[in-house]
Length: 338
Ligand code: NAD
Ligand code: TDX
Image (cartoon, rainbow, N blue to C red; front, side, top):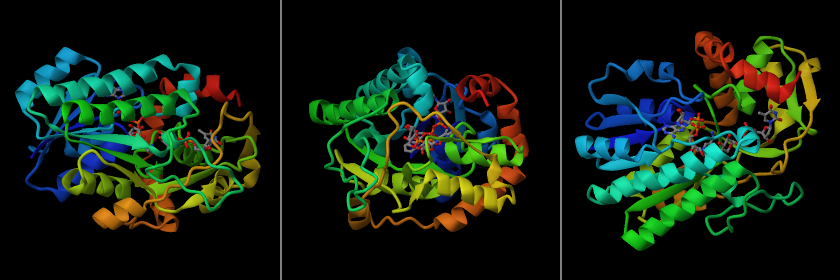
């Protein structure tokens, strides 16, 4: 099979490419990535010389560029990871989120229906369901939970999901959607909670916790998400949505304290800062459908995954030091002022 993966120079797309090329020795992967601030070619360095891999610098909003690539590559499958993905940046500047996450998605699907009704998988997020109250631990997001978004980011992802389902109904495009909880692991961009806390801890910098740190996220090791996507686009039912999550809910403050402990630092580094606008309280996925239909279960326990992740950041300092020394520094100073 010839697979187009968009956004493969980012966190989850990059991990997916590494996983997929190993797991499927007969398949070929073509990565399309615009290389925004979040895209890093160094993430793909280990596969750049693999004869079953091709990298193309391309914006998914560039319709002609995308159509030309489809004509050349004749893909069997498209997996769309490419997105603007950071909630805080969407609060600062929603426009680019609408452009990439909605228009980009429709371009990719238009190319799919123009070049032989190509199989299409949309990588979405649990954030499309909004949030759950902190005091109702009995509630979980199922695939039937209504879309009810909080941020420009989650609204743009929800808009994309609705388009994907509409392309299935209107054009019979063979689609699936996965809605996953928070991922963590190697190659995670340092603006996100876990890598931010690890890299700041290693540099003895303050650890900015929003509000009181009581918001809850449901964390999944990135390779488990990659395996779920692999299963869904090979064996999932066309037109269906699959929730992906590992029943691993944790308060932000507990994650931060765990990282401090693992790195032998002091809790005095914790700095409570102004809360995120519209901050979602709790995410919690019910993954029963993907388990019952496709046999998926998370394989990495959080206690092991967080140790592996911290070790990766210790062993790969050049990867993140290069990022935080560049343009990212301006974002950080604007955002945190600490
Ligand atoms: P990321 O920000 O680390 O990577 C995004 C990648 O997309 C980057 O390489 C960037 O250069 C590329 N990109 C951005 N705009 C593009 C464009 N217009 N054309 C081509 N490439 C473009 O994001 P991530 O955390 O790896 O997330 C990947 C996908 O998974 C996103 O769709 C996100 O919504 C979804 N998701 C993420 C999480 C999470 O915890 N990170 C959880 C659930 C779902
Ligand atoms: O400096 C921080 N301090 C802090 O307290 C940052 C960056 C975050 N937080 C809090 C906000 C959230 O409650 O930590 C939690 C996690 O924040 P992020 O890492 O920004 O993730 P989140 O907003 O939960 O969204 C992530 O999961 C769902 C991804 O970024 C999305 O792309 C994905 O769809």
